[in-house]
Length: 254
Length: 226
Image: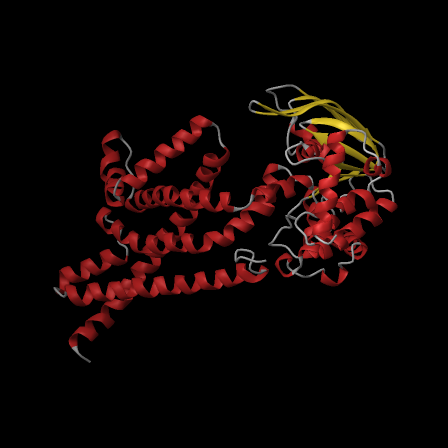
């Protein structure tokens, strides 16, 4: 489903991802955890090409693309990969000039050129799914963070991507609001949505993800089923990292 | 009716006529064309290749650094000596367009870059191309914050068109000058012309307020919100 081979990302002199090899099955839910600056977000952003990797190759669904240092891949190829993916951002990034339902319809109208009525119908179904149907005509600025994030999830799902990428989807939310987002993501996971999420939120990683990948200093340092990683991490560094997460979430009351 | 009021009344028709067929079209046309030039320049400044960026910076530097009146004189009186002869209205139109383009390019560059980078990324993430993101996400949000500074430019432009009198365009101010030449009543006529400019500017200001309300409907995303 998703295949990363020798994926490398360099910002100037700084090598942020050092040859990542990973594969994720269809229907799997993977959490990327690890210390800040370890490369989680960059890895996620390389999967939908918001960052262009400097070397290696990437396959999402049926689309494959390889990268060479100093050359940008053809736009059409980038576009093909992006259409296989949906993304949820830490700060929601809803379009402030469009209502909730217009946000969800936007990709369908502008990119997929669906007729308005059909797009509205699909958007309404998705808003219902994330529990936001009643707020369909609200402006984003009038919604709480948790509500905005749920609309953003509906927007990302609208064009039926093969994989949903979530970049710290609960980090900007207090524990109560993040609870509603975790619930929605958990429901999507149970329905078989393929997801990859970068997160600091143990609750999210432990409850929703079945696979956990620990990234540190641009490398995969540990991976496995979420149950085993959290209960018996192999490396001392991972142990310490998970301990800090647990104490953090305890202190936030989550 | 006192004489001065009688004079104002008698000359009102020809002043309004001059405003209607010269001042207003000159303002509207050069503003619309200037905005197109300005938008193109702003996009080049933000996303264009280096040589074009330098060219645009040169253009803005020259236009902002020289008086508008001098620019109009160069176009209308200067260019004929290298074989480019323009009628007064066209020369004015070009001069004002070039001037508006330089100033608004700076405004548009600022408002386009004020839209958060995350909005580009959100647009790309749902599959939009660069031009779709620009058209559907960035420009609508930039337009909202552009209303006050662009209104400033527009209102300045209305008044600046009076400079076209100096290159023989028979617009509002020149119409007033002609009547002064015949009646020797500069105070009355020039105040009358000033009042007409004031009315036009006031109408535009209220239009600006209406635009701001219209764009403001989607809530206070510009205000700090928790």
